[in-house]
Length: 424
Image (cartoon, rainbow, N blue to C red; front, side, top):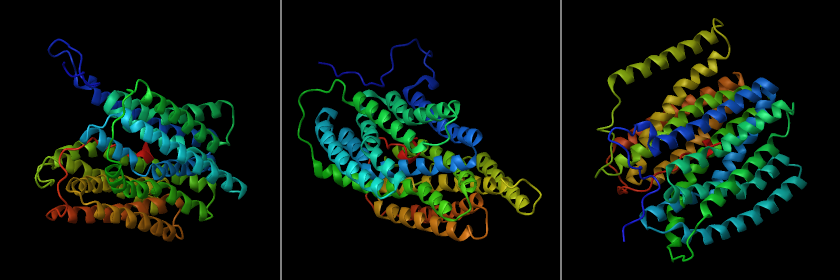
């Protein structure tokens, strides 16, 4: 009996008829890019329709919803992918355990939400109430990717961003500039329920045994890094909110972070492709993955122009918004470079180094932002903190990547999930 075709298998076509842009991988990236565009569009719309103070409220709430989902998932999305790709464990075998985990998570989250609400921490209550289905959405993506293919995965990944964008548009039409936390809870419930229903449709009736210890071992290796990275935006906006500079400053800082996160999303798209190549090398390195000289010159010119614009803004010869924008551009590029070198360390299996980098990166960014807020406007302080932090992270990652690998190469593995904190 012949094997069933892959969900991503191309349909027969005349030679030359199929274009690269029509491939499942390209369609998946396009869908995820659409989700990223909707995330940015939602922030811009809220700022334009309701003002920067409302954007500050929206951005702070969304950052905590995203961070909580990543932290609550405990790295299980990557662990589930590992079992499906490396151990050939079917989603029908994994689903009963995932369902029990979600039920337990729902019970604990609802109890925490009630306690937070009674204590007057209403945002925390909304966030905790969203955790079961928000985390379930992340787990469902891992079940969908091997069985339904990259196009479905791309759509499900973009679904929360599409719903958020539609929701804030409706709020604008109805002239309701409050209640963003309730909207985000509804989005988490709709996207989680949809993705879980899709992932469990048509499951086979015969689950098989699978290694639970291996699931936790792989999951916890990636959980700490994901949780620390997901907490960065929420932590920075919380520091700004506590600085006393006002809602408009918080809103402008949230918009500035959107510029930075555009680069993080680009790195998230490229990292799995680079990882696949690096993991096939005996000693993963960037020796054969250098940017062309023209690209390096163009990037250097863009950084110099951005820094020049920031300097002109400080001197009063350019608009004030050019200062945070001019700092965010090189910060974003440094973040991409750090992610590239970090991918080398990941391919070598150096999880401890990556976890340590995630911890001091978060602590350094928050500490620098708190200090910079004493002398700079909020958006500029956040941009400066990210610039210094990402430059140091890049330097550290590059130094470690040049050393002989201490961890064993992991070999070709499952495709990595994009950063959940940026999926909307």
